Image 1 (cartoon, rainbow, N blue to C red):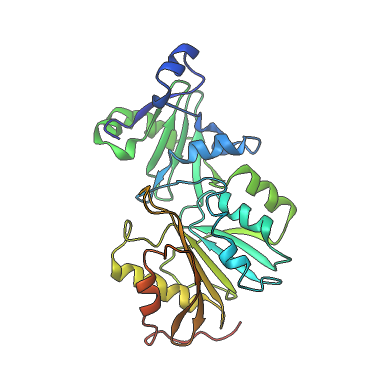
Image 2 (cartoon, rainbow, N blue to C red; image 1 turned 60 degrees about the vertical axis):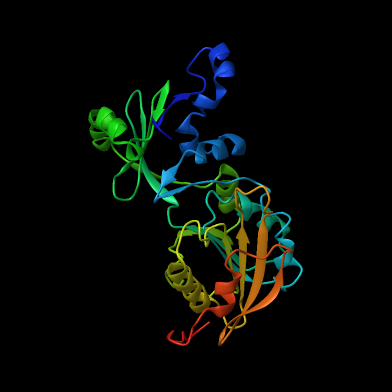
Length: 292
C-alpha cells in the first residue's frame, strides 16, 4: 500500500463509493461491536496489519480440507487447539462439524488489542502501544505502514493514547456469541514457537501460518518442534495451507505424533508446502514433557 490512507464507507456520497469502491473500507468500528455482521467484521479484518502480518480470513476456507481430520481421527472427547486462527471464522466451521469434543481453544499471537475513542476517531493499538489503525468518519489510516502517514497522524495518535483504553478480541461476533453459550470454546494468545502451556491437546491445527512465505526453514522447524512438544502422546498435527497462486489449490496434511517425530496419516492431493520439514523434524533434543 503506497499511501496507507483509505476512505470509510458510509461517510461519502453513494455515487462516489460506487465509482471508486476499491478505495473504500468498512467502518472499523465493527471491531468493537458485538452486533456487527460477520461479513462486515471479516471485511475489516483484511485491513488489520499487526505483527508483520495481515489478518486474512474467510468462512468456508477449510471446508474441503477439514475432512482430513474429521474422517481419520476419533474426536469424541478431544481437546483441540487452533493456532493462527485469525478471527476464528474457520474455527467455527470446524467446531460445527465436530462430535462431542472436550474443548476447543482458538489461538493467535495477536488476539486482543487495546482501543480508544475520541469524539471523532477510533484508535487501535498493539500490545506495545504502536498505532495499528486510526479511523474517522471519512478517513482510515495505518500510521505504522508509512513514515509520512505516521508523521501526519502523530498529533492525533498522541491524543488517542491519552484516552481511556479497553481491550477487544479480534474474534468474529459469531465466535464471541458461541463462547458466551458454550464453555468448551475459549481463546488464548499463543506464539507458535512456544510450547503450549497446561494440559496437552489431542489435536493442534495450524492454518496458513507455517509457510515459507513467512518463515525460513530453521524457524519453521523450531515451530514444528514446539508443536510436537505440545501434543499429547499419539496426538495429531493438522496443517492447512492457502496460497495466492491460482495454480496451487489449498492443501492439508494430518500427522500423528510419535516419540521420534511425525508420521503421515493423510494429505490432500497437493501436499502441504512444508511436509518435507514435518516428516524430517528432529525432536531428539527436546526435553520430554510429563503429565497429560
